[in-house]
Amino acid sequence: MQRPDPQRLTEALATRFASPTRSTRLTVVLGRWLGVSFTVCFLTGLFSHGLQNPPSWMFFPTSPVWIYQLTQGIHVTAGIASIPLLLAKLWSVYPELLKWPPLKSVAHGLERASIALFIAASLLQLTTGLINTYKWYPWPFPFRETHYWMAWVIWGSLLLHIAVKLPAIMEHWRARPRNRPQGTSDAGTAAPRTPLPASVPAPGRWSRRAFLAAVGTTTGVLVLSTAGQSFAWLSPLNLFAPRKMGTGPQSVPVNPTAAQAKVADLALTGDWSLTVTHHGTSRTFTLAELRALPQYAQELPIACVEGWSQMARWRGVRMMDLLGAVGARPDSALRVTSLEPEGAYRLMSMPAEYTRDERTLVALELNGTVLDLDHGYPARIIAPGRPGVLQTKWLQSVEVL
Image (tube, rainbow, N blue to C red; front, top):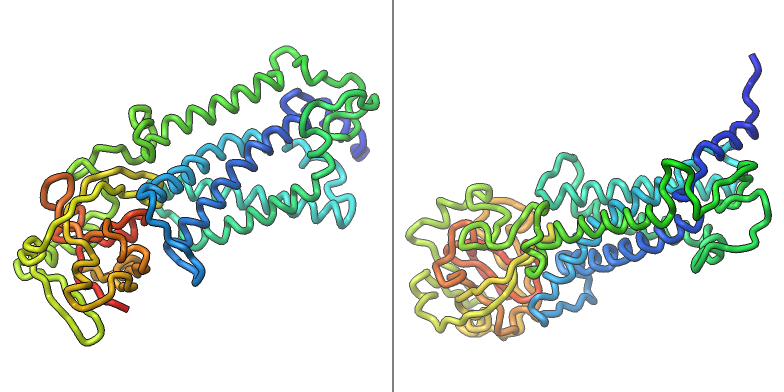
C-alpha cells in the first residue's frame, strides 16, 4: 500500500483550509486585541493578589474608595472578553498544527512547545476564572493560588511567543503586505496554485472584515451583558452575570451566608461582644456600647474578587476611635478575627493605611437599617478600596499588632 506523500498532504490541507479568516494579518489583528485583554487581566490580577497576599513593598491605596471596584470589575470583564478573542485566534491558526512534518528542528520544536503551553494555560485560566465567578469549584486544587501562578505562565509564554513571531508580527502589523512573491500565502508557506484572495471570500465563506466584525460584536455583547455586575451604569444590561445589583438582603448581594459560615448561633447570642486588644490593654464592647459611641456614615462599595460590586451606605464606629479607646495609635496594623469557626478568611490582617483612614468603620448598619445576619450582624468591617473577602463579617476581636 502506497504511503501518502507528506508534501502532497500539506498542499491538500492548505487548499482545504484556505480562507480569508485564516491569515497572518488576521492573526496579528486578533493577537493585538487578545494581548491587550490579557495584559489588563494580568496587571489588575496582580493588584488584587497583592491586596490579599501583600509583599513587604505593597502600597494600599484607599482613595478613590472605588479603586478595587474598578480594577476587579475590569479584571473580570476583560477575562470574559478574552474568551471569544482566544477562540477566534485559535480558529485562524489551527491548520498550522496539521502541517507536516510536525517538528522540523529543535528551534521549531521549542516554538511549538511554547505555543502549546500558552494555549493550554490560557484555556484553563479562562475556563476556571469564568466558573469562579459563579462560586463553583469542581476541581481539587486551590483556585486563587493556581490562578495567580497560571497568570505568570501565560504571561511568560506569551512574551516568548511574541519574541519568536516578532518578524511576522512587524510585517503584518499595520496593513496587508503588498507585492508578495507569487505562490506564498499569508502564513509565509507554500500556497495552493489558485489561492483565495484575502479580500474576496469563496462562496459560502466569510471575508476577513466580516469575521473581525463578528468577533468584535460577540465580544462587545458579552461585555455589555455581564459588566453590569461591576459597573452601575451598565446594570440595566446585566443579563448573564451571576450577580445583579440591588438584589440580596438590604438590596446588596452577599457571597457566604451566615448558614454557610456556620455563625448564626454565635452571632445571634445575647451576650455577643467585640474585644479590642492593644498589648496589655484589652477592652470589651457590647453591641449596646458600640451603638452608644459616635456613629459615622460612609458611602463605600462592596467589591468581590468574582467581579460583582455595589455601592452602599454604611453606618458605625470609626476604627480609629476604637483603637483610641485602648490607647493605640490610629495608624496601627491589626489582626481581625471573625466568629467563623473555620475558613481561609477567618483571620484578616489590616495594614495601617486602612486603620488611619476615617472612612474605615466597624459597621452596625447598612442602607439605613441594622445589619442583616448575612451581611455580618452584629458588626463587620468596611474599609475603602479593599476586596470584599477582607471586609470581615461577624466580628469577634480586633488585635493591635
